[in-house]
Length: 155
Image (tube, rainbow, N blue to C red):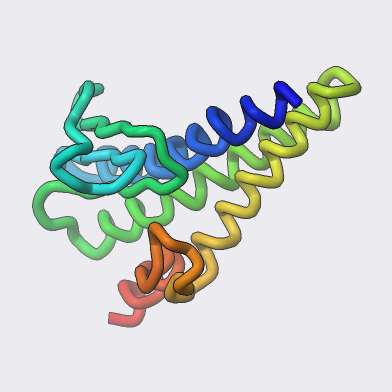
């Protein structure tokens, strides 16, 4: 029971944050821009709480996240920033999948498997080109990373 509480209250939001950090790292490595990483909504109540170089973190407990870069990015820079989030989720899924296979048996193995599934699900849902449906409350109507990337490559 404790693992379930930790999983939903800490691990899932952390996976969302790491996905957004993936976008941020892509934008920072590809450009000279500052990037704002949000866990939670992009609103006045979600103030910047710390900064690591050009990454500015705005964190309130949530299951949604966003990355916004200051200024314009070239097509190539934007593509790198867009793919950064799904790539981070995929890498985390692979890492925790490996830990599931090689790590300790029992509850920790199950815990690592859940983290693998969350990150793989996040990778799949963000890389598939689509507009998010209404039931995805925080993202409803927004284009997925995959759809933004597809549109960028078509132009």
